[in-house]
Image (cartoon, rainbow, N blue to C red; front, top):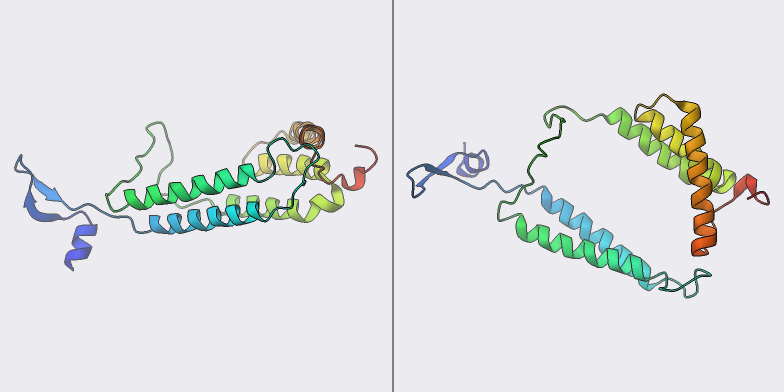
Length: 186
């Protein structure tokens, strides 16, 4: 076993602390650098996209459409820098004391796949069906995938939430969401 693999496995380095206990090498989780790269990429994309937005995008425009994507992009890049500085220092997150998830158990890829399928369905169906219907179906579908078995109640809650968000975007922000087959009714 090489010295690098011994250190990454938490083996002692031969050095001792002031109390006489053997010192263990810090384990650097290099996979976290991938998170930094993704944060920088998403942040840079948001900043670029915000700077290329056309003026007058929304009817009600008190702060402009650029402010939030710019702010989020800047924050993402700042967080990537902070994480990149913390990684070599050995900073790792601690497990939540109240968390009952076993980190050694395999992921539930079926649920993840079904949720990704729901997102794809929203992308495909939002134009022809409209946000109100698609949002209701998405809420009910996500609740069912995550284990809720009150299907009628989920559809009603999803319908109420999607209609409220439809009018919230249209009336409050001046951004029309697709009405789809309910065009003229909503």
